[in-house]
Every structure is written in structure tokens, then in C-alpha cells.
Length: 126
Image (cartoon, rainbow, N blue to C red; front, side, top):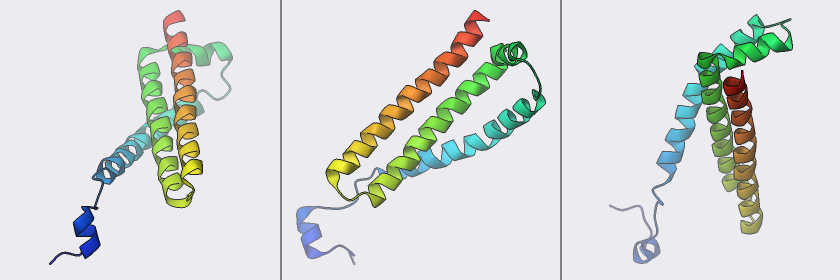
């Protein structure tokens, strides 16, 4: 017994088969953000009262820089996926929806690259 309508069967309309990948990506980034965010908050709390040079030296440590890069990528990718779901669900005009999705992706890429370049600059210039 099929739950599809006769018209749906004739047209061949059905699942786009893309939702599962998006769902998994959102869940995996959320899962990775838990330990990364806890590490970041604990590390920054430990640096409370430190001067700029101390913080720069902390970012310049290879392990910290690597974890910061993972955090940046996970945050911006997770945010982009989340805003995409909200836009697809709640923005009904196709033009507006496309504009929001393009702006969201552009902002995530530009701001994410700026953050990554900042960490890499500190890491390699010391």
C-alpha cells in the first residue's frame, strides 16, 4: 500500500533524498561543538585578567590553534545549516528565500575565513 497520491505517482514526485545528509551534518556539528565550546570557555576563563601578549601566545600554541580552527569551522557550518533550515521552513517567497540563503552562505564563508586567517596569522607569525 502506497501513501502517495495517484498524481504524485504519475509525476514521480517524492523525497529529494537530501534531508538526511543535512540532518546528520547538523547533529554532528552540534555534537562536536559541545566539547569544543567547553574547552574554549574553560581556556578563556583561565586567561581571565591576562594581557594581550599572553592571549596571543595562547592562540599561537599549535594545539590551541588547531582546536580554535575546529571550533570556528564547526560554529560557522552549524550556524549556516541552522539558518538554512529556518529560511526554507519560514520564508515563503522564492526570491526572498534565495536571497537569505545566499547572504547566509556568503556571511558564513567571509566571517569564517576572517576568523581562520586571524588564527593562522597568529600561529605562523608568533
